[in-house]
Length: 196
Image (cartoon, rainbow, N blue to C red; front, top):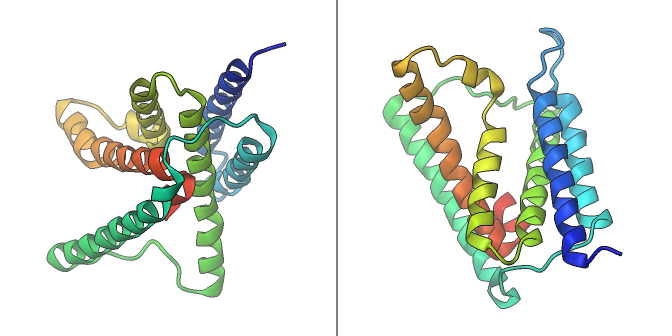
């Protein structure tokens, strides 16, 4: 019989493979009128359910006594992020909102947002699966989640040095920063801290 830690690591590898499959599905174009996100959101939700209910669980890194403070800090960071975006909008000019403000649009945005829940539970499970090499695991999770956050089509737009620098500064580094913050929050506060 396999040891528990070996089973947990094998389960984490399965979640990584599932995440790669979902990433490939997100970047598949069927036709112009069909969005693959409608199919991948249930896959992320299913992956989160599998990670929390069916797979063996690892140990949490954060202490339970600090979880409430971490949630408060996560809420403070989210508020600061929104305020900074509003200030940037005033300074640089507001563009057209990508969000719809009809009831149908709000429900659609909530549906697509539920993929974030799946991603954060996958991140949490992988971090809890490897307790010995926490810094290496955190770095690998940050890199992996950054890579699957960037669209495959964005990588194909790099033609020369200039477009490569623009891609790194406008797409890759912001995603890397978000994933560093999300991984830190998940590491200390669990997946709900990052979802906040």
